[in-house]
Length: 506
Image (cartoon, rainbow, N blue to C red; front, top):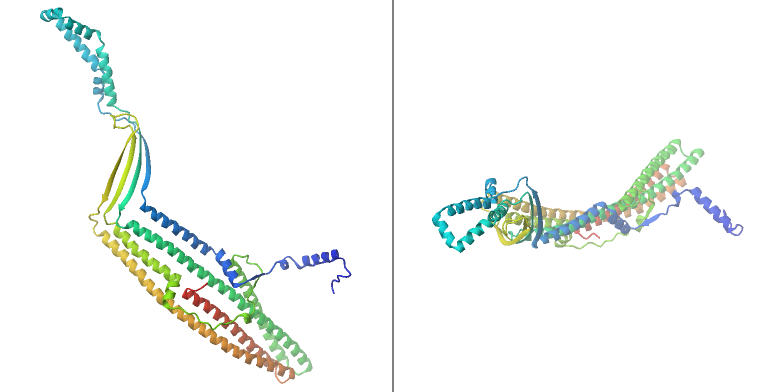
C-alpha cells in the first residue's frame, strides 16, 4: 500500500495528500455537478433572456391596462405663459394723450378770458358789485388752482388708456372629463385587457419552447453518453481481437490479411469514438449555456444509463376542446381576433359625435376685469364641448372596412392554426407508436445479436470462425444497441412534443 496509517504520522499523511492533489492539477479538483431534467428546466427558465423579455412585456401590458383605465378619469392640467412685447398697446393716440394731460391748463386760460370780459361790461359789473355771492364765486375761481387739478385728472385718464403691455403674464388650470367619445375609451380598455392576457399567453409559449429545447439537449447528452460507452466497449473488444489475431498469425493459423482487416475496423471504431466524444462534449457545453452555467462546467446527468429509462404504455387523454383551451398559441390568436374586433370599434368612434365637460380657471397680468390694470386677476368658466363629424369623403367607411378585413384575417388564421395543431397532435401520436414498435423490435433483435455475438466469439476461440465473422457479429450488436437508444430517445421526445401540442407540458 502507498500509505500505512500505523507507520506514518497524521501530519505527514496530510502533506503527502496535498502534494498529490496539487500534482493532479486544478481541473481535477472541480466538483462534478449532477443535474436532473427538472433542475435543467428550472435553470433554463431562470436564465433565458427571451423569457426575461417576455416577462417584461407582461409588465408593460399591465401598465398599459392601468393607463387605459385612467382615460375614464378627469384630466387636470396647468399652463403658464410669459411674453415680452417690443411695444405697448395704446387705446389713444399721442395727440389725444397730450390733450388729456393739459386739459386743465386749456380750460383755466379760457376761464380767465371770460372773467375779464365780464368785468369790462358795465352792466355785468354793476350786477357783480351789488351781489356778494357772485363776488365770492368769482374770487374762488380766480384764486383756486383749477387748471392744475384738471391736468392731474386728465393725465390719470390718459395713463389708464395707455397701459403697460410689454410684459404679459398668464396662467390657466384646465379640467376635462369625457362624457361620450363613441365607445373609444371602453374599446381601449378591452384592448389593454386582451393585450395583458396576450402577453401572458406569449410568455407561456416561450416557456414551453425553452422546456422543449432543454429536453432536447438533455436527452441528446444521454444518447451520446450511452453511445460513447458502446463505442468504448466496441474498441476494447476489437483491441482484444487484434491481440488474439497477432498471436494466431505468429502461430500460422491466421493470415496477415485477417490482421489488417481487424486493424482497419479498429481504426474506424476509434475514429467513431472520437467523434462521439466530441459530440458529447459540445452537447454538454450547449446544455450549460442554455442553463446559464459556464460552458466548461463539469456536469453529470441524473439519467445516465439508457436502461434506467422506463417506457410507459400509458396514453394521454385529451379532447379537441381541451387542446384549443390549453394551447397558448391558440389563446394568443383568439386574443388577437378580439383585439382586431375592438380596433374596428375604435376606428368607428373617430367618426361619431363626442361630448366632453370642460372647466378652466384663467389668470392674467395685465387684466381687464376692473378697468385695464397691471395686476393679476382671473376668472373661471365651465361648459360642454361637442364635436360632430359631418363629411370626410368616405374616409371613415373605408377605414372601418379595412379594420373589419383585418379582423376576418385574424379569425381565418385562428381556424387554420387549429387545423395545423390537430395535425401536429396526430403526427406525434404516430411517432410515439412508431417509437414503441421500434423499441420492441430492437429488444427482440438485441437478444438475437447478443446470442450471435456469443456464438461467434466462442467459435473464434475454438478456431472454427474467422476474425471477420466475429467483428461482423459485434458490429451488428453495436448497431442494434444504437438503434434501441435512438428509439427510446425518440419515444421520450415524441411524448414531450405531444404534451406541448396538447398544452399539457409541465
